[in-house]
Amino acid sequence: MTLRTIARWDAQAVLRDRWFLATAGAFAALVLAAALVALSAVDVLGVSAFGRAAATLIHLAMLFVPLIGLTVGAVWIAGERESGSLVLLLSQPVDRRTIYGGKFAGVAWAMGGAVAIGFGASGALLALRADADRVASFLWLIVLTILLALATLAIGFAVSAAAPTRSRALGVGLLLWLSLVVLSDLGLLGTAMVLRLPAPAVLLLGSLNPVSAFRLAAVIGVTGSAELTGPVGLYAVERLGLFGVLLGLTAIPIAWTVGAFWYGRRAFLRAVEG
Amino acid sequence: MITIDDLSVRFGEATVLSGVTLTVPRGQRVALIGANGAGKTTLLRALLALVPFTGRAAIGGHDVRGDGSRARALVGYVPQTPAFPRHLTVAEVVAFVQDVRARPADPLPALAQVGLAHAAAKPVGVLSGGMTRRLALAVARVGDPPVLLMDEPASYLDAGGEALLRGWLEDAAARGQTVLLATHHLNGLQALVDRIVLLEDGRVRADAPLGLLREARWFEVRAPGPAPRLPEGVDLLPASNGALHLRARPRALPALLRALGDRPVDLDQPSLVDVLREVRR
Image (cartoon, rainbow over all chains, first blue to last red; front, side, top):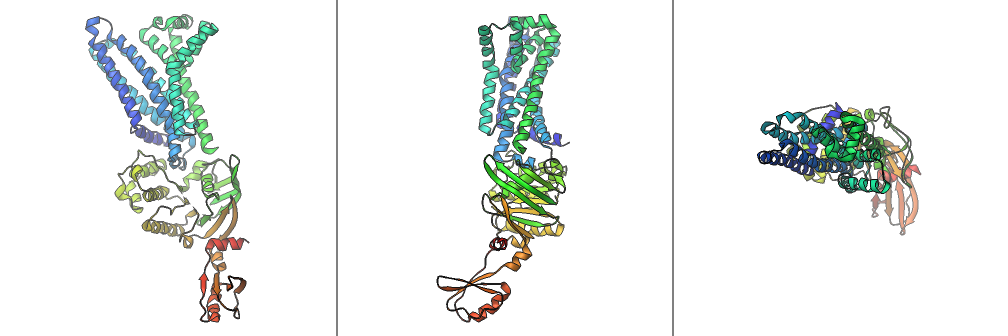
């Protein structure tokens, strides 16, 4: 009951947060625009509108969802701690684990809702105008995006719980976003070339990044093959099968969510109670 | 109701509290006084498990760390610098605490009690210091907790707010609430507490009931000329600036003034804190 109460209040708080509204709004608008553009070209090119829309949506999700999750998560607890308003909750008869869980659940609910609304609108548009038979692929994309949101939010919360100040938490959050979204693939590519890593190692290292895992799982899930994912994806499907790869890749953001949540809660308890 | 046993707090190399032992029985109102940095705020925060500490602290028999939720269920807390989530309105802050304490109710009556009903729809970010303090008082009373921990509750309050606070402290006594009030000066609240505890450098230096302090209170009397025949209850102190310097118990003061006749008299009464320090010696 208390966890739900805290979650409800924090969901309300995040829905009043200007940064969250701006980034989630931009994400939803771009997702909708991507669907409209994909649909407008369908007759000219004769190529699946869904395929084009999905490719754009995957890239939008890769950019925006970790940005929202990491930055909003990073300032959520650190900001309240710095302003002193966290004491209001810490002095109430609520277990500190419940406070952390409730706050995470509230922001996660709001983020999940934003993703579902953004994707839902464009999904409905695509289903009405073209490719109604690809609803399952679209739902798969929504589920994966929500899992990516949860993973990056959990990492952001962990940063927030461990960071001494709001500004440092935000800095670390942005650095992580840059690393996970931009630098990680480049770093992996360089490492693989220099160290001549075998394919299984590249696959393992690449998919440890929840953003990369999302991209691979989304592309494989939507297209039904690993052809667009390069040799590493092909190797993985050959060894594990399509279902096995999807299962493994889906487990990555879940593992990040659980691990980061656990670490963040521990850091929160240590910071609060010593 | 509140039991603190050998409680110590260290922040890095600095020892903020050292071996504090204190018991506050149910229904007692205790003023915790001391200079800035004496450790008053830290002691209250330790009772809410907001700072790491060694030793033991319990509220209503519940260990504040091992059984913290139950301990905090008994406590209403007014922090030294109250802060609230800035996105909430005044009414939402009270509603939030009512929700968390599973005491859902209309927040307006609680706000009316502290004179904030007119500001119910305002965001907390626009409140003045005094209004923020009043809101903290309203929040501390949600669920009518049997223990009130108040950290400098009178600061920023105007005359109306202070009257409200005094009324609440009187009310607390009538209702059998336990109050631990930290302040660096009593500012007229001394009549509303039952006991004063002096903290210095993180240690309890003195602890006395108010009745004893009142009895022990004296007057400092300075007057020119030789010492008259001193009535009982008056001590002769070393002369200050050539003037006669006397210390008189309250009951001996009329007789002393009569003995001094029509000499000009400089009369001074030390604060209860000064008396507490003297009692300690």
